[in-house]
Image (tube, rainbow, N blue to C red; front, side, top):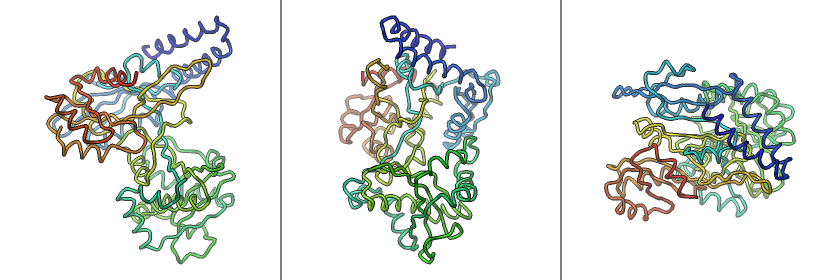
Amino acid sequence: MRLKSLIKDSYTALAEKATQGQACWAAFRLARGLRLFAELLIPQRFFRTTVAVADPANGRRASFTVWGNKSGVWYLSRCFERSGLAVHETRDSQMTSTPPSIKFVWHNCAVSWKFRQNGWLVLPGQVRSQVDLSRGMDAVRARFLRSAKAAVRSITRQGLVYHIVPCDEILRRFYDEMYLPYREVRFAGNPIVKDFESVRRFAKGSVMLAVTDSRAKPPPKLEDMLGALIIRQNGKSATADLPGLNGDPLVALERGVVEALYYFSLEWCSSRGIERLDLGQSHPFLDDGILRFKTKWGATVEATQAGVHNLAVRFVDNGWLGRHFLANHPPIVYCSHKPPTADRKLPTPGLIGVARLPAGELSYRGLRRLWRSRMINGLRELLIVSDPDSPDESQRLAAQFPGVRILPCYDLRYLAEAVNSLSR
């Protein structure tokens, strides 16, 4: 009911615009609002799920709620599982013995400003990873992280090479024999999978980059491919997406075939004069494995324009679950979110990272570890939430790390207000 009242207030303001001669704009925004209401009323797509959480180490229990589709619930549940907690999903909020500590709401991006105004943190639904190729491949290699440089040495040592092949004739086999098996291993349990028609539309007019051993004769057959992905070019920019692996996906992952796919995509695009390569979308969390895999190739994180939904987060109490979430799954949040106006589109705000560091670990070594692991290209700054005994001393420590700011916060219920006030 709270969500519906927020949306109703925002669209009441749009209705007032209609009386001021802006009827077309108001009608357009009202139509998008009705679409969101329809999604909320269809249980197959949007529903509220309560997830009970337990810490096996000490027996602590808590819960959080998610308004969203199955894929959103699946990902947030896997986040907490990845950090060692036990989770149990249910649509019945009465099955949990405690009220939720965190609320997550997937919502239409047109009303994100209203959530932010009412004390929520707003995350982009997805973030994109883009690599700047305009200065040549040597400049790109200079931005590789240490793990990426080690992967390139392994690719060279194994004698892996790439081939560019048309994907029209083998697209169906690629989808069935390479793309789906890899996705089932990499994203086990995710109920959302791209259907073949979506893949076919993306591949129309595109090429397929295939990785093989040096012994394979060109053009390689599907049986000779170790892995492949599709590259779609649009002028001076391109998108590399839909990776697939041949044979046993686990063996190919250990061999570094996925690293070879993305490295060779950078090389081929650079040789073609492409200035910008999009490596696809990732979830807006600094610990997300796919996001970290892409940023090690020198990618910059940007808010995606393709998604319709953003994610709003509110900490209901100052319990252990909220602190655990910020410490283990630091979110990427919008640093501003202005309401739409009649004379311009929705503005694209910048991104900041929000992580937590306990006061006992607030030292030069602790900040250095967090800065090296959480600060990525594309973030305006990294906010470190802590409860320091000496705020002035903590700010002097943070000044030694570019883009880092300490945000004293002794109660997570007021965190969103503190973060949002920094960019008003």
